[in-house]
Image (cartoon, rainbow, N blue to C red; front, side, top):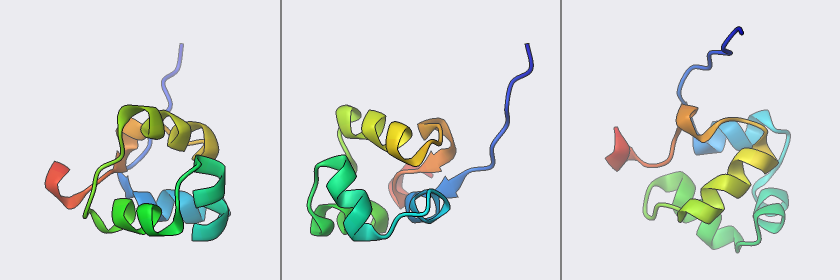
Amino acid sequence: MQTQKFPKISLAAARVNAGLNQQEAAKALGVSVATLQNYESGKTVPQWGTVQKIERVYKFPADFIFLSARSL
């Protein structure tokens, strides 16, 4: 079985790659735009349930998304 490899990208880049603006992504994730902005800027880190939603909505594995500058 071949494993797909992805480079690490920012949460904002993953959103843009999915073709979503912040308002669309926030609605799909069930969070406010301000909350999404906080996630993207690294001010806050999403809870595990939200991370799972991000994977589904952005169609990108969370293992390859920088969720905050603190996780580097």
